[in-house]
Image (cartoon, rainbow, N blue to C red; front, side, top):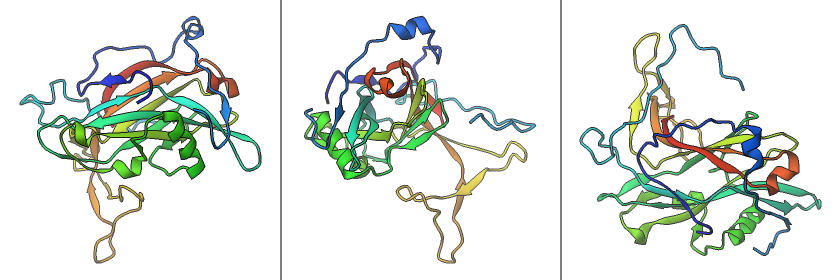
Length: 267
């Protein structure tokens, strides 16, 4: 993977940081230069809580291998998010963000790995990186990664066998919001931990149910009788990466970002 990847260990990170940096700190961020490329480059406010709010679940404070937490964990390393401008058919430049990552199973047993990476901006946008991007976008990003082993996210889903011979290199890609002042965004990475927690309805105390959706299409699954399949809602241990952007508008895409917080949450 290009650059020096940042190791994220499968344990909660017990360091609390402010989600927004003071302007003086922001001014000191290290910038990198990203130039607009053509198709062949060189290189909402939360809802009001109910009368009885749902208690927040927290990830286990114990190591994954301990008796107190039997959940498994995959080794996840990632690069810094970067932006690239890609010339469209009409000659205009559209900006995209991408983040390279590697997944390796260091457990003794194989585990099913379905990568789910979402990006949430401070302006309210939510991008699912499993959504296919135009081929010309992927091709540009692939060349920029400089790693011949990089695979699309959809192709690395499946059983993750133990050992370095079976590790996967991939890249998450999402569009940059146009015409908006995005000062911060958060990346959520699910599918790398086995720890889950069922959720009960706070009003009734009974299991909270929701339709089962296909992991690839997102459509509701139905049984032989045509009825929607329901299952209890579960929270998943999820890696949360919080970044701030030092600039606004098109300049933000060429100024780089800074990681300000990294921890695990139940989501």
